[in-house]
Length: 411
Image 1 (spheres, helix red, strand yellow):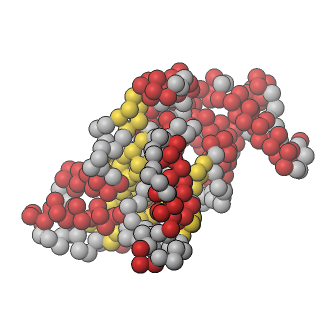
Image 2 (spheres, one colour):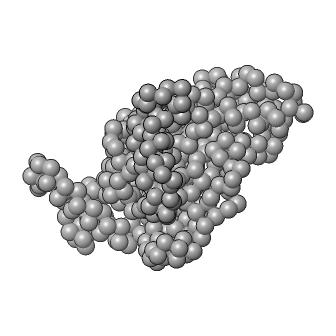
Image 3 (cartoon, rainbow, N blue to C red):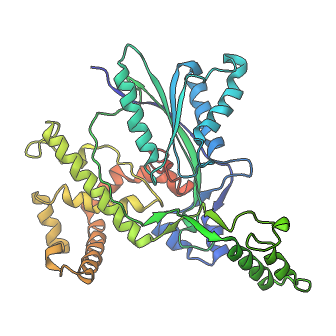
């Protein structure tokens, strides 16, 4: 039976970067905490000519050149991103436009005409969704049709200046070649899924009155030392849509929509959501593996010990190893080796031990956070991290958060 998966992968990162030691000095932050505590060494920064589309196009072109692909053989280019350039038109079309210009002389002006493109946006998993979809499409075509798909991930992770997320910024892109009988990684059709409709990280669209925006701009200008001529502010406000002087209106709408590239987020809550989602996805995967006869917990080696590398989304380099103790615990809870860990760090807190109230839930979460840290300090977990996670976090230390690329760009 033919298998599908990742045949090749190409990466593109900006050449500009901000060393974390310089950032810490600039912001008056503790470099030791950023480096030793979070694993941050530098953040990639797009140049003035770089964006989601250019980074994605550069990665795809490397993939095409290295594999001597004819553009007409590529059936789809699906993009996972949180940094779209357009509210309606897929950013993948901008990538395709640049690719057509690059390859038109050799392959013709319409060499990508029959290639399907789309964007997928879902926090940091958009590119995983794009890959999952493309794997199914390639597999459904059968080996005889030899379908070829490319999954692109590209993002510019930006946070408000001076915010607690600023030091995790980064940027980058990449492209994954999906086809039959892959050279790099075969991916079986078994997925563990966990979805929670939480609001730990989002980029809301807001509607505000134009008058409010203008008033705030004028106030900020005055605070910055600007001096206006007599009644200038009032004259500007009179030219708003609600003014009677419609023939002199300088703003057409009474209200405007605002969408910021920088997110609204709750870091501590996000950590808990991350940990719970990874654990529940693993539980779902383990259940399916047992049901399909791929894993027998009675006879087979511990499931997570069978994986040579564990690659997870990394908003900062050490996030994976900080959150993975929950999976480590669940995969070993009923084994003799776990009894030794309990003797060392004590029994784990259970939800049933706390009141079923908002305060009780918060107390349990705090206790569970502490227990997770205790697990992370055990020799058993440190060895596990060293063997399976450590190498997959190195790129994040040097590049920073890449949103959708923080999975594929790390491994």
